[in-house]
Image 1 (cartoon, protein in one colour):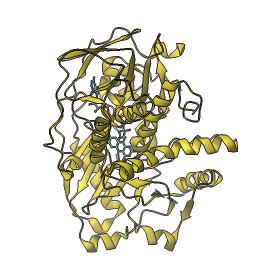
Image 2 (cartoon, rainbow, N blue to C red):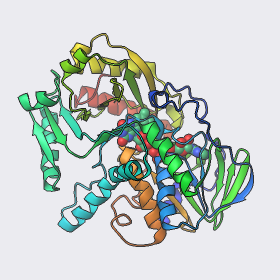
Image 3 (cartoon, protein in one colour):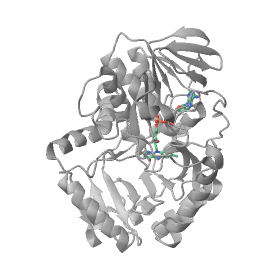
Image 4 (tube, helix red, strand yellow):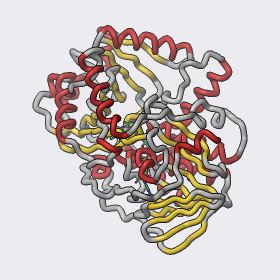
Length: 455
Ligand SMILES: Cc1cc2nc3c(=O)[nH]c(=O)nc-3n(C[C@H](O)[C@H](O)[C@H](O)COP(=O)(O)OP(=O)(O)OC[C@H]3O[C@@H](n4cnc5c(N)ncnc54)[C@H](O)[C@@H]3O)c2cc1C
């Protein structure tokens, strides 16, 4: 793909990624007792493999799972700089909406069916891990509620309702008493209730996927930070302590990709933060009326996403998305955003006034100007596969991994012909302007459009 050769550069490895500096108060690892789990040995010495996957998040693990299913005799190696699930995959909000890969502009009925099948595959794959391999990730498939707080948002919601109905999805628009049966908040004036969707412990999912692919025979090296990639017919991959050569490479480094020279000025790290409240009392749960335990988000530009945890807390993220100057990989905490999230939670549910934050953390998502993922293959030798830029990535990264495996077969099907395949990622402008642009955009959303969280 010619146009893609411009989105990675050959002068790679000038600035190795520094991703170890975090202090993360990630509730999910704690809740799953994973903090002290033994992680794999780093790669040492020189090696060869058929396929090297860089990044042990959902994209890398799902790619390994699906590639192994198609090419069982190939030697597949995952190189993960920290531990599998260390990135966004192990610290997200656990909010799993299954319809994010729908092409809302598609009018053709046959194409829609294929598109919907692809979009729902992510959730189906997670269910396959649970039912076939016994993966336990506190999976709760209770659907989703998307809420509106003003008339402008209701208008957009009505449009979405029509689109989803048209697609044959089971959705309802709720108002008044019907809405109160699902959730009680003085702020919500309408909600879109959708059957497809689930909540889960993301760290358990990532670590569980690690075990599944490892048991299949995939070699996983953790603590193996890739410091340089030299693309070629045979790709050379250097880590801090070793190196590996492979004819096929998969870039599954999402928000960290630019650090290796990939997707420069197109995909950039955009930080989102999450808090876990202390456990709610029975009275508090009753007061907010959230008995059906769906994941809830809202229609604001800087929206919040929240889920109830298995042990009775509210896990809520959002309120602000921060771009740190010069594509910086920043610490995984931001006290002021945590406070914004808490303030917003209490405005949504005033009966929770005084509730405390037990854990607060965050991390980078892979931002792009049009907020759409891209999965494809690039390089002069057409041998570097990738999947980046997911917004609601919990299910769509699962699909991204499947798409990568399908692309490797060279077959044409609904996955390899999906609209995100080889989708050109728009130029995001020079780094030095990006921080100012992000501030201006937020100001515009808050003060002019008046459709943002608390800033
Ligand atoms: C705080 C937060 C909350 C979120 N909440 C939600 C949510 O509720 N619902 C939802 O759907 N999505 C959510 N997302 C987005 C979702 O988590 C991501 O889209 C998804 O996990 C991306 O998966 P990935 O495998 O592509 O990337 P990652 O999980 O980030 O994996 C990339 C991996 O690559 C490794 N890596 C990077 N560079 C190197 C290198 N040079 N060498 C070796 N390894 C390297 C990293 O250590 C990392 O483990 C959230 C994201 C964040 C950060």
